[in-house]
Structure formats: structure tokens, C-alpha cells
Image (cartoon, rainbow, N blue to C red):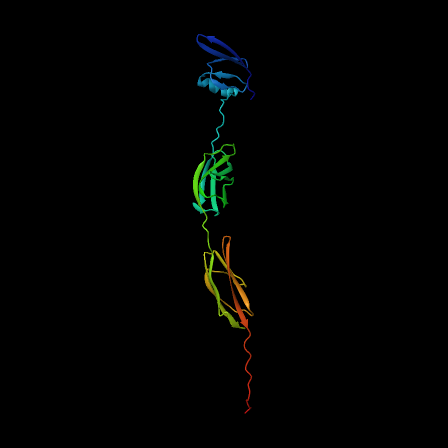
Length: 252
């Protein structure tokens, strides 16, 4: 339906101001109210409710009501571990929610190291020594940021780890061809222990029977992080002794 074209005329009666509206050949008088016609006419005071409804139905009158954007909410799900050594990997996880839209951006920060990440979840091994106040916030698709939420993590100085190969031996260390020897070892503070010559990964303490066909050196490698210690042992293989000749035997 095409909306009416209105003309406004004002007059004063006593202490009251009136606006008269001439719309499509019909005169109407109203006390002013704050409403906005689509055609641009603004009424500055209160109209009777019936008149307001009539305007809405007949002329497409609409009140000015800007849309409200509700800011999102941020939540830190976990920071693990709660205390770490310098250089240790720390995992961060967070998320956001938005009642009237969606979360489009994330921001993690440390009061000591500054910005950490713009992902909801991440890992880092570069936190400096000290107590960190971690802040997390999210942004919605209307550009509004949530209130900042906080957590903390304590990073202590890395403790020097000494990997020790306490012992690595073969018994016996010399064998004849076809015989076997027993490798034995004991290692401290290693996360990984490997012996070459196709033996592979082993425990910190153990034994292994070997039967090399020729003289062989075995190398044990103990590893923790970037710290490596090694040990070696050689199993010597000798041919069996020649049989003794038989002299002075007569055939009976």
C-alpha cells in the first residue's frame, strides 16, 4: 500500500503547542510525541494510544529503535601443566560464545611475554621464567570484544639433567664362532635408550643375548631432550681351535 503524503501545520493554544497533520486530504490534530514517520515528520510529545496505533496502520509510522549487540563471552578451558620448567611445552585451550552472532577472533596474552596466540588452542615452549598472568578474550562478528578472563602459570628455571650410562658390558667378551654373549646395561635419567646392531629401543636396565658371526662393537645411546650419552662394548669372535691330530693309532 502506498503511504500518504503529510503536511504539518502548527499553532499554539494557551500554554500548549499543537501540530496538525494534513494527510491525503484528512486533517488530524495530535499532542506531540517522539515518533518518526517514514516521510520524515517527527511528533515530539505523547499521543493517545489509539492515535499511535492508527498511525502505525495507516501511514507506516515507526519508532526509532537501534539494534543492540550483545558482547561475546570468553572462557579459558585449561592451561597444562599449571607449573612448567623453562623450555617445557605448555598447552592452552579456550573458547567463546555469542548470543546474537558468532565468535570470529581470539587473543591470548601474557603480562610478561606479550601476545602469545590468536588461536583458540595452541602449544608453546617459549614462556620465560616467572609467574605469568594469562589473559584471554574473544571478538564477535559485530566487532565487539568480550570481557577479559584471566589465569596464571608459573614457569621455573630448567633443571640440568645428567644422563648417565652407569654400565654397559658383555659376558663373556670373547666367544668362539657359533657361541653367544650376554649384553647387560644400566642407565639413569634417560627417556630413550637404544642399542644399535638391530637391537633397537630397550629399557633403562636390561640384558640381551647376542650371537655375532664376527667381532662386533655394540653402541648404547641414552637420550633425554637434547642430552645424549653413549656407551660401547665389543664382543670378540674367534674361530674354534683346530682339532688335535691323532698319532700312533693302529687299526684293529
